[in-house]
Amino acid sequence: MKKKLIVLTGAGISAESGIKTFRDSDGLWEGHNVMDVATPEGFQKNPGLVLDFYNQRRRQLHEVEPNTGHKILAELEKEFDVHIITQNVDNLHERAGSTNVLHLHGELLKVRSTKNHTPIFDWHVDLVLGDKDENGHQLRPHIVWFGEDVPALEEAVDLTQKADFFAVVGTSLQVYPAAGLIGFTNPEIPVFYIDPKPAHIPNLSNPLEIIAEPASSGMLVLKKRLLQLI
Image 1 (cartoon, rainbow, N blue to C red):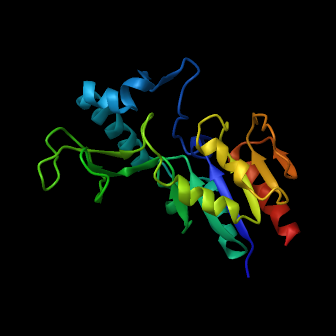
Image 2 (spheres, rainbow, N blue to C red):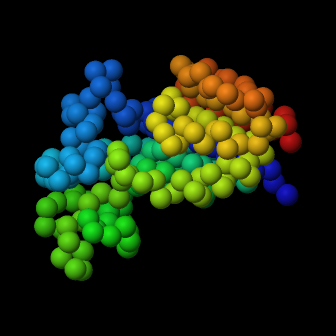
């Protein structure tokens, strides 16, 4: 039976494909205050701005491709039972060939009603005011905004608890609840952390190996290390 490899990925793995990380150094996201474009209150105040913001992200996603980091994760499914828990809303893991991807923060190419969490619709074009569900309610991006519950968190915790190996790739471990997942690992399993500027992980008793490199080159190191352990 294949060993279970659980991988938590963040903005760093998609940055190498050309998708900007969540916030620039000035605290803005593509020139916008995050609270204006990524909160329920921001959407209520100016829905047109929010829809346009995500329309731009969606268009950008159509122009980029998975990178080596994404592809190595897909290749690891030959040797491991790989499950990816991602904070990213892009579909680059899936496009690279990964078959088990759990999106904690929603998906850019999906939308849902402003009144209901289900059903969820695939959406690859611009979303505008006036795009409504069958009951006449405005559609919104299928994104978990600040202040909203994370519906996939329970499944993510369950996966983490079953890991034989746990890897963190391209995340600062500053955004909760995702950053707290590492605390649900079996304390005896190896944890690998790939990031050019790795954060300190407090109260972690697991064997920890830090790979202080960008996602793609770091994934090459991780693949070699994992194959040595099976």
